[in-house]
Length: 305
Image 1 (cartoon, rainbow, N blue to C red):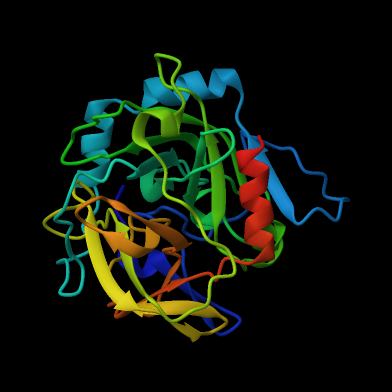
Image 2: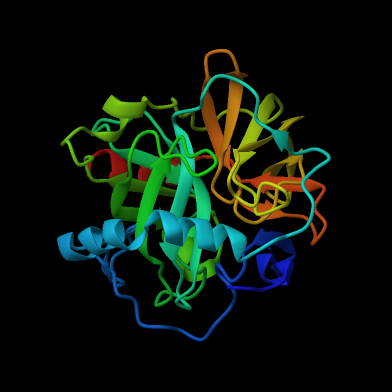
């Protein structure tokens, strides 16, 4: 898989939108039949759209993402040097944040970043909608999806969790707006649920914009190339109907958390958004959605699933 970072960014209605994890992650393409089935009816006014992956698909996903394949996908893309704003995360091992691997709608192996969050079913994960499916293209969905919390330089300290369902705003499916998603993962091979194993970050909705956050993600920049968690710290402000911080994380960091009140000593904070968009091919800003009423419905669909 090899593609320049031009596949990572596009302009939609005057607003910067990232398309990507790494390389060819969500490059624009003609509609491709999905292998995962959408459970929400197109005729229903439901603001949430849900993809479901069958037991067979989930088993295949766990078998697909071997150590060798994970290593290969990281080596297949290099988006240039990291930083200077994005620096290697230094703190207590962050068990809740990890890499989200999948096969995109064009059939390419790739990844995003994601976070285990507190939820009623103890199985919810937050990421970006473009890590689940292409915006404004209902048939273009991603498959073979697994979450590896605490990933660090090839180590998988908390095993691998197959994604069972993925909820996104219907506005993303139809109009490429509101770029956030909530996933539900299966229990691990020992039958333990996700947050019973790694814990979960609390999530806040309708939180006022303006505080300091840490944005984290597995950027496909050198020398890390997705193997190490990177972190930006900045104060949020409103822009383009979203919120923005100064940050030069890029592809691969998509879906990574914005944690308010974050402590690197405890590894705890409050998730207030996810990495969703860059301002340019040489980024200086990271955009994230303001998590409002629709985001709460997406999260509720996942935590009650």
